[in-house]
Image (cartoon, rainbow, N blue to C red):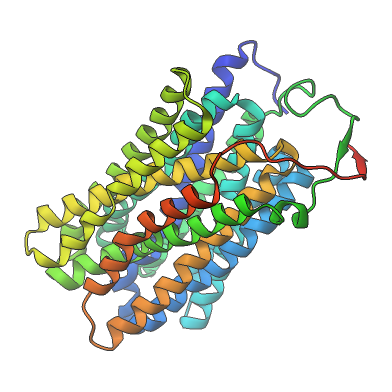
Length: 425
């Protein structure tokens, strides 16, 4: 482990940047299949429903391991836990390049989900370790901005690989997975060199202190927890549709080739990065001006949700720039929203259980993506346009915001009492 830097104030923001790069790699990895889809289908043909099934294979294990990964991190600690998680998902990403058929692709998607499921719980746990409540939304905004960085890089990078790389006689789409998987392994080395756990005298208490055990049942006993999970189910159903289907929408609606689509497809993802920074920054600014946590989070969440319905207009225009603008609004609003939703566990749960709650929230989001993805795949194979899907996705964040306002009247630390304690390792 590296020695502690002398300036913890500067170091904690370096941690946020380090985590942002990890999340960027995760979003690059999960964008490989959607953007390389047409090239893969030349060698391995499959329908829209099968495409939705491959997306679901990723999301099911991603959601389950969001919970499992959160628990793993609470047991192993952030440093060791994230090392294992990142190494596994990078190898899983590279394994797509070896696929010879649908079954192998599905197996790779399942493994990628297993690995990536721990990414955001790890980031949330690190934020809880290193940042005070007033700075957490800003830090999570920086980290969540990594989703945009990875997704912005993906379209042009994948387009270049598909059109320029054919080393060793292998199809270019296979190199998409080999090269992106390699980036994750490089980051793993960087993480083990750079990251350290804060001093035990910080938020986690002194080493060896007796801590109350917080069980999964205790966490789920709170209505507020279930409300956050359900809100994430709704909002991430929309997000995963945008993430996995935007490339195909551009191909289907405007008949763009990969080079043209790649040259403009990064713009909504860039907007999502701005949204992540603005949402987190606005919430932190409101706290700095004396607003309560409840008001600061809900004002930013409400403004984020208000940007989502505009995407319903996309099927009614044949202008590619206007469609890109409408999706950019939705992406901006979604990632502003997502930053704040992922901060809520740090507002509600003690540090020793925040990975578990972050995992539950992520699980809810992944299952929303599975449900909507299957519906959209079925509709597309049965002759429906994209309009019903865009009406649904444009409404989901509004519904999620209503759920939060009704079921969480006051965002605050939740009470946990238990007669049993454990000794911290």
